[in-house]
Amino acid sequence: MIRLFKHYIPHAVLLLGLVDLALLITAGDLAWRVTAGELGVGLGQFDTRIWPLAGFATVMLTAMAAVGVYGPDCLRSLRFATARLLVAISLGIIALAVVDTLIGGHSFWRATLFMAMCGAIGLLLVNRVVIGGILGASAFRRRVLVLGAGPRAQRLRELGDQPESGFVIVSFIGMGEKEPVVEEAIARTAIHNLKRFVENLGVSEVVLALEERRNAVPLKDLLRIKTAGVHVNDVSSFWERETGRVDLGTVNPSWLIFSDGFSSGRAISGVIKRAFDIAASLLLLVLTAPVIALFAVLVKLDSPGPAFFRQTRVGLYGQPFDLIKLRSMRTDAEAGGAQWAQKDDPRVTRIGRLIRKIRVDELPQAWSVLKGEMSFVGPRPERPEFVADLEEKLPFYAERHMVKPGITGWAQINYPYGASIEDSRHKLEFDLYYAKNYTPFIDLLILLQTLRVVLWNEGAR
Image (cartoon, rainbow, N blue to C red; front, side):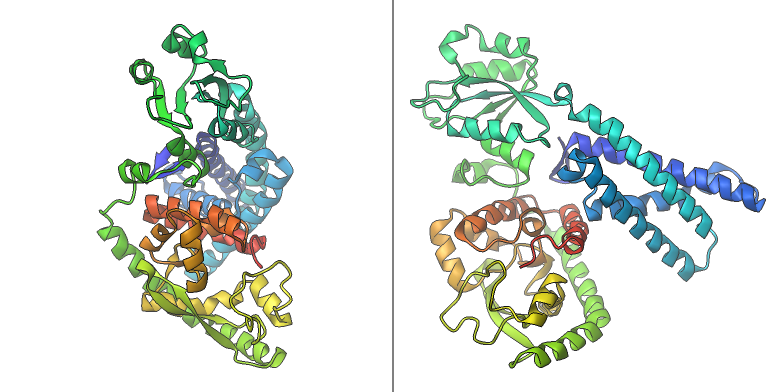
């Protein structure tokens, strides 16, 4: 994987994106040439149209990333990729047409955009058939050797067996665990020279997945493997890189302390984040004020009670604040105390079900963002009643409060809506990854991917 701004991007996604960029520019240029010929307009030099073509390709790539074209499902299924591509290209063309109308320029003729759209869809689908088929072969996956044969090693095998995995485990080495789980593991004592064994298998990375590391880490072997040019990694770092989350099943305090992350050099990033929050929340409140007012009236007409409701949530550094949302439940929804939301929750009103589905109930939270109690991107703020219980049951839960809570976040775009201790555990793993690796770049990725969640109603309850 390539690490870009502290975030890991799979080689397959990066290669696919770069080829897509070249194909989009090609499709735009071909459409430009055809339209210029039909209208009898001089084509001119390529450098005179490179910027409009680059703008076309950038808008299209942004739309593709936003709707999930580079997600694992699209990389596995051509039918899934085709559906997302059609939506992405259509959104991109609409955006470009609107921009062209507003600026009154002639950079993008409507006929050019239509032909560029058709050409782009064809070229991008061919790219997925060719590149996807090549990268999906095991020969192009990283070859990994696992030191360990216990539950951690077994979990790595399950991760490697997933279709979207970018690695293949070529061997497991049992390091003397009392109860080996991976039956095909080779005993360390059966291998005379571990370094030579690694080289003969063509291994590119060795992962240390021992259940008990005290007096069990083969330091001499690892040193020889490392100096031979093979990457050596521990299971927690490997899991973080491959899944985009901090695995609570393997992580310990020392790893969090000594691993890269939680950088203190966030002053500039913090200023940029806050400036964006202020500008975006003001704009969102102004633009959506009529929508909020309309649904507030509908909420009042649908069920007795106020249109808005306030609820105490836990924010930055564990400080409480009042969250404002459009009311989607009956006023007596929690007469018996705080409860997790449920699938097809009977407490939700008719209008409440609609506004939850289209996320309109979230819009008033922009006021909390404007006040500085929240950010657009960050872990979802939980209720104090739940936080107290979760901090007792889940390790490192308090660390998620080291960053401002947000309307959308890394957990929201990567994990379906959940309302249980186990769901909170999985979401915490994503929240810790965000808190550990925060940069404005990952905020941008999350904001783009939020469109995918809204369009396909992923996670709403």
